[in-house]
Amino acid sequence: MTPKEVIALCREKDIAVVDLRFVDFAGAWRQVMIPVGKLDEDVFEDGIEFDGSGVAEWQPVNQSDMLLIPQPETAVLDSFADLNTISLICNVHNPITGVDYSRDPRNIARKAEIYLKSTGLADTVCVGPGIEFTVFDAVRFDQQSHECYYHVASIGGAASAHGDDSLMRRALPLSAAQSDLDSISNSGAFDPGRSLVNQMMQRMIEAGMKVDCQRHIATVPGQAEIVLQHLPLVQMADAVMRSKYIVRNVASRHGKRATFMPKPLFGGHGVGMHTHISLWRDGQPLFAGTGEAGLSDLALHAIGGLLKHAPAVMAFTNSTTNSYKRLVPGREAPVQLAYSAGNRTAACRIPVHSADPRRKRVEFRCPDPSCNPYLAFSAILMAMIDGIVNKVAPPEPLNTDLHQLPSAEAATDVGVAPGSLAEALDALATDHEFLLADDVFTGDVVEAWIAHKRENEVDALRLRPHPYEFCMYFDV
Image (cartoon, rainbow, N blue to C red; front, side, top):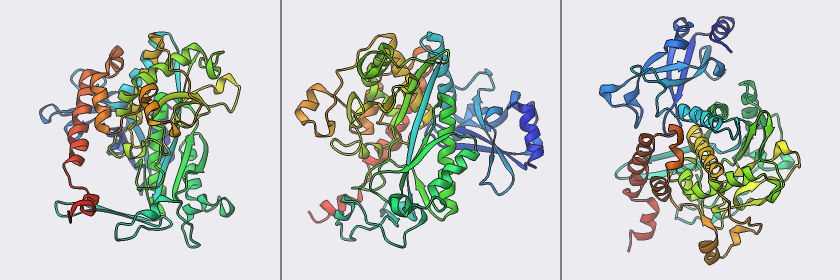
């Protein structure tokens, strides 16, 4: 779509409001709304001004003037707005230099794609994530100096008020009066016309996204996954952001709350964002070959680079303190930094559903949906490129159930994912040269990311008493 076509669409649909969106470091939408009368073709060239000092780790207040440059190909009608609204994703520019802003996550993703092409290794990276989430009927939480709590409702059961969490350690039973969403956990009672997840999927399709499927996950009512069909990196990061917006709003329209927290409930399964990746050149797939698991040497070196740099990459793909409550040895998420064909306990799985070379890909199973998709996908790609350029051989494939791997063997033979966000940030601090190639990630971006995460998330949690500490220690 061109600027002229966007303006024509605004007239055709009687648009009143233009929603200009960009993404901050944390991976949240930021918005500037303008009346449709202010949108002309010049705006697509000159941009709309905004205050960059209001975004964490971006600009100081004395250098806060920034520009949003709308991207016409991202135009989508917002069906959730009260007034007729069109949404446009924007790139962020520095008005003094006139160049793309180095800390804009979408700019980083664009540079990653450009760098891939410049290497001559491939001209396209295709990304296909499965976005998992949890929907609750109601959620309450608060944090004060004198109290800290969370409470969720309608999960098929509840723990005792006296600290007995045993109910949360098993599959929670369904009740006859549960909500529309809970029907996805019982295939016998599944009603497509009533499923909230089907409504979410349909809204995504109406917004121009291609959806592969939706499905219930694990054993906890209210958890689901929507799998998006593969797209180039930047387009897919845009699609993930729009998908999360749709999931939250459809849930809200039904009086419910959706969350992408990796581990919202103790004892229940967490949610991830298993990410499928493949490289292409001139329309031809590059990951199929005659090597292990039907992979090419290029694919094996890409896996080698990803596994080598995985602890640092996970500072972006698993970027919250809550992420590491899902990544626990022997549980549902893979923590062993190994690869294998069809093995869901390995960090890198090679799907074996089809012999079609176009379907040959690598699934990185560690990421979760709390991440910033622009930064997460870019970090994965940069690790893979580094592995290909330097011909990094992956370790021997492991086809056993790695959740059952003896701890001594795991410690000596298999790399293990970081156990906390603090460990991932430490890994990033010592291993980030691969991200700096061609200034895709700049040094100031890496430093700002580490500093912000340590101060505002790692230390913020570390310094606060935890409610469970009262159960353990109050009467000691």
